[in-house]
Length: 494
Image (cartoon, rainbow, N blue to C red; front, side, top):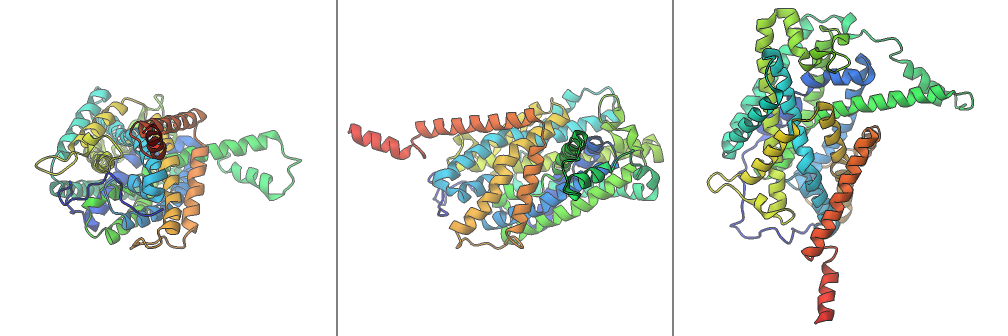
């Protein structure tokens, strides 16, 4: 499985190219703006609802135990193959650019056309929810349309200007999270923060019954049901945690625009994961140490405070004027997140089209400013449409769509590349390989297996339809796996 360039990739010096402008600072800013964004301010009620209390923070622990080793996978692949498209490029080369890599790259783009906009849409949904604190009568659908169009307009420009915008949005993100953490620390009430409901840790006793004594004959059906219920609840909390961490790899999607990618990409990925993990824990404790978690759990229409729990926290301490100011900062943070997402994700269809794996129109660059304007407009438009769904549906769907092809696929790609391309230059190599890869793999399997069965079915159906579409496309274009057969058929007829 050689590391050959795609047969469709331009070879001339006149091929479209991007400007390398992102250093470690800008790359880390891009990742963290994406990761923090509206996530912890929006999803804490969902997280707490998964297990019915503060013990749901275990979901964030499981999530960080997945994303740290997975971040190492991204770092090795990104440093070795710094190009636009990220996963598309890694899967293509890892599985063989002329054989199964074509299928994997196609399936990634296929699912990404939906999962990418789902993630951006979650930020728009969060923006609309927090705006509801300031403007209760605002139409959420109208808000997401306006914010989506503004986001597209800001990104419709040259990359060197975007780098400055990214850092400014990142600074706003850090100021907002810092203010929330400081306020929570100054008014922290441990009785509120650790107000566990009755039976919160009963699962430990049940697990001990299941695995500790080794005697399953005395176990009741209720013991298994409780343990399974806890695991599915932990899976739901972990999905929220994974969603909050998504974006630690965002810089990999614009590898063509990164300076010294062999060092910049691994550093920005690992710094982002560790820093945001600490920030999330502090934000969570800050909120539940001031606002009783029972006021916003479960997160549904019966508990409207769950839409803007941080604003409620600030109003409780400082009054409504200060709460409005902080809400405006959260809106700034939310916008920084969707800005970073749309920037990175708009490069993926561009990279695929440029290499002949997607529709050619997506490979066009703006004639004056050298950015993929068609891809930007399409991804931005679909993101606005996805914003009309519920937040829970958006999160579950995007996680399900990505796990099978992207996250698990990349873990396999690392192994295949190490086996079939040992000569590939790797500025960064996974520490203690293959242990981190195996940990990430087990984590993704756990998260996927605890999804709602209907979501799993939809993800498998999407994968099956994508595979059928690939086979049809390959047949009509006489490409792998039908190229040899078509050529043989033509020779026989001749």
